[in-house]
Length: 406
Image (tube, rainbow, N blue to C red):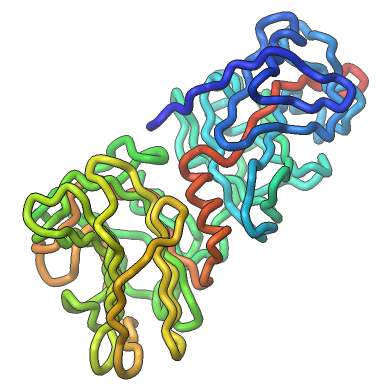
């Protein structure tokens, strides 16, 4: 997993609590010992809480007169969304990557006591801890995602019970690929081939696949993942290709009964030829007369993580967009003929195609998501930034004031 570099900070404006990420160091306020704030694309965090400038024994800022969610949780950090295009986006699930620079990992009871609370200091947000160790990967569902949206991360309650929630509820399916489980709650769990392994990926763990080998995960067809594009659908995934895969057409996600997408569809790599070091992405959708094929240029490099998103609608006329690393890319399109073929009896396969191992993916696949919504360009850009740990900024730790937590 990647560790995002922290930006050193050296001052604070206490009247409005406006924090300039390039110049503010909460340790200057807390008398040393507070953790530095970290961010990526977010450039500032303007606090709605009245954090005091007095230091505590723990080295963090005292919460002052700000409302506090629950005195059983003595510590919190404000988290703020950076720049978002086309917001607000409703029901957006953000990645919260944690390590000792952002939270005291040892004080969270393996993440069990984490609570994420909206800016009203009352609404508890749904979250899922994907994994926990020297780093933590957590998913939090925000009612509304927009520039400057703020929420709070509470922790430090050793007696807190575990949380059972499903922030990806409403998705067709979500596979984090540290396991075969479907995180959406739809029950679309995968069955792995014996050779599948899980290794450090872009976000937590990823599934590892080898060219010309049975290293795929199969998901039996079921209602949750059938007819994904009838009224518009979205697929998103992180990939890191070692080579361009079997015959230069490594399958990312495939739900078809032949190589051209019959009885379903296929999303795969497409190279310029043997030994190619750059590749594009191709989507093929089966129609009754001839399949539609949509191909991007060969602009993605090997051994590099890329975020790929496909938005497709089977409607007349069909519409298709592909996004690489959050940006829409040009495509060469072969439009389909006839009517879209149903995929109700077709197994979904991650990392290979349905007929043989001749189109196996070679490399790592992470965070595969299927949605029955044609997502906007702004949503996909935010999804890329979130997965890349470049969407959120973290404020200095605040301690519950004595008036609330005697």
